[in-house]
Image (cartoon, rainbow, N blue to C red; front, side, top):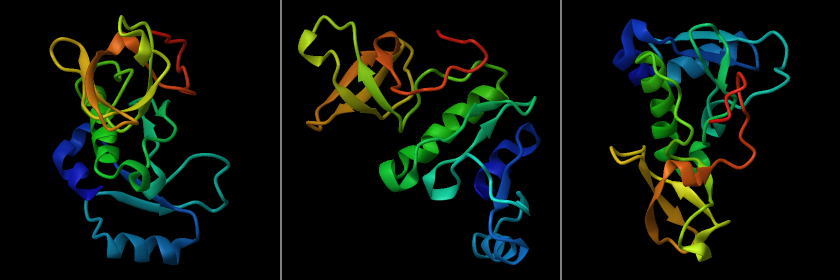
Length: 163
């Protein structure tokens, strides 16, 4: 997280919130060497959200939730970081967050290759210039699919955006 704070500078803020008191928050910040992030703690246990290895909460400049839980590192490894970066890159560029990000599980629909419709896959790249993402099927085969043919199961629709 500290590397992101340096990379994005004043364009984004990174806040580490501990949920087990100030001593553990300080210990966590020290062990992770968080020098460029804001570190705090919650007085009460949060009612929602996932933190750390289970994902990040991403807010926009107006503190509205853009993503309540990014991909979990423990499930998709480095792609979890690519998920956060895809969101923060868009937000800091003044763009709308992408519908599909690396690290997310997606469902394929509306394809001419009918046998792929309804299958779930792991998105492993941001959309390219042709509007396609590389996804990895459960069979481990990788295919390039148009973003319009991908949906994120159980994704929240924020601010009425259904595009």
